Amino acid sequence: MKKWFFAGATGFFAGILNGLFGSGGGIIAVPLLKKSGLSVKESHATALFMMFCLSVLSVIIYFYEGRLTFGDAAGFLPGGITGAVLASVFFKKMDPVLLRKIFGGFVTFSAARMLWGMMAEWI
Image (tube, rainbow, N blue to C red; front, top):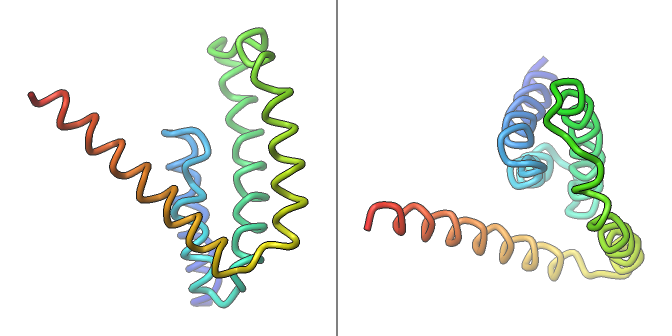
């Protein structure tokens, strides 16, 4: 029961972040999945799958509400697909410690960028 509650809470918070920030749910999903007993690589892979499913749902909702234009996204897709394929190839070979450090760097960078933006609004 406790495991299902933890999984549900992780999914809930990841869904909120994904809906608000566009796939930001991985920031909370990866550490919580790791805490639930998954390895670093399993946590990242599971979080990616969660974000994929949540992103597909978000696309459907935004399209239904008329807030999505595929033309705006089209220019980003070739580079995004290429980057995703390359990352998945390197992911297999990457040391879990390095992966954790890279992830931590991105989380730190994102937090600093958000704080800087908030401070800029106050000044």
